[in-house]
Amino acid sequence: MKKIYSVLVENRSGVLAKIAGLFARRCFNIDSLAVGETDDTAVSCMTIVSSGDERTIEQIEKQLNKKLDVIKIKTFDEEASIPRELMLIKVKYNKSNRSDIMEIASAMKADIVDMSSTQMMLQICDRPCRIQTLIKLLKGISIVEIARTGTLALPRCSE
Image (tube, rainbow, N blue to C red; front, side, top):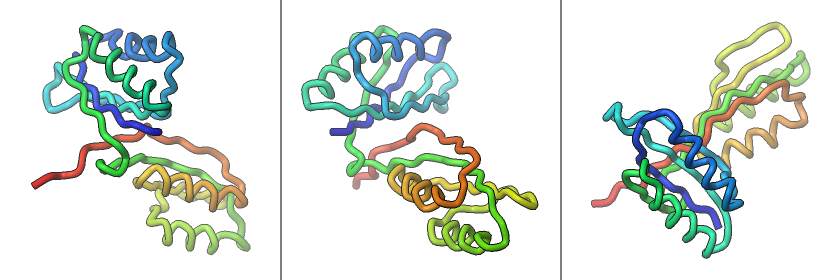
């Protein structure tokens, strides 16, 4: 079971280390972690994706709530949110596979952001499962390098 935690924390040094330390000490797994300032520069938002059984998921929220630097926690499932991830992926190409790469990029709504005579860099911002699909599609075409952000997510809009 996967859960997304949107954790508002005080924006000061050491907070990320404390949160990561909590996960390490308790042997909780972090599938994805992204941190950034909010509209208030004194507050950062940590988006943590973690997986485990129901008890583990419950314990994570309880332990996060104990931290002094934590202001507020929201939890939600992937279905109840809009998750997004950004990836840059560099692939080698030649005359025979160039059009295949471009077709895959087009089908996956990835943009070509850089190109040389032998390499191409694609950018995609999408759901984590679609990012994985793009990687699988390009695996047979010699991936040179990948850089991915952690998952960012907000709960769906409600009326």
